[in-house]
Length: 382
Image: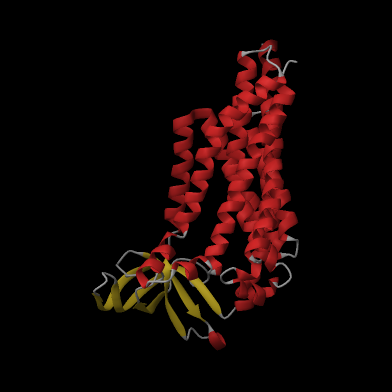
């Protein structure tokens, strides 16, 4: 009985238990900070508008049709029962105009929708269907994905799911609020990116030499990204003020930090790729050192770089294709409308996508030798 108590006590206070407990506690603090910050209250300046979830209970009138492009257009008059706020349970009549754009919603009975109200002078003088209410669907997809991770990979999948949840809390409840409250986007994004990387790698790999190597390699990748970003943006004459809709942020009070937001957004998108390469190479180098305990630094470094060549080739290609795919419709539009190639490649939006792809890929390329070098140094026996 005493032995069982001793083992349980030891397991309760081991490094992993303490680590995950501290991470969970920090997520509670992040949620508290983010929820109580100005980040969630910025909508107060637009207090004349309200968005409420509702369910369509009746279609009073339907004058819609399918146009030649296959999109439904026209007008509907709907009865919607509101599902939230002080007006929960109230039934309102809503006019629904359908255009061939992303926000158009074809109303059917039972469909959950988001209703926009313009409360000018205290009266609901205008309302329309803003979009589908996808909240429940989003939660189902997220929980399903995390469950799939746990089902397929077991304990490792649960650890990966935990790191994803921690990353979500860091970005939504920590990074965004402190940027809104005036902190430099560059400094805050770099610092929080390092926190995300270290916590994610420890969550997935536990404590050990390969964890240290992967963390150091990832941090070097962030440094490589910063250098690459400023070199490429200099040659392409790109600043944060070139980004689409940045004028809205400037009006909202981000004029002093607008030039840093592009840097922050690309870095956030690159964290996963940087960390993936660092973890793969640190693990490979570690396995080589375990299989041959008498190996020296030179052999470990050369072997690790051989593995790195294959990983970098596929990772860089994946990242380039990811950014290209995100811009695919715009590229297709250039072809359809006959935009000259020379004009197209000199467009600001094309240059920004080139900056995103090359800066991120450069960081991934440079993280490989940094990770292998440090891994070989701490794992070699000679």
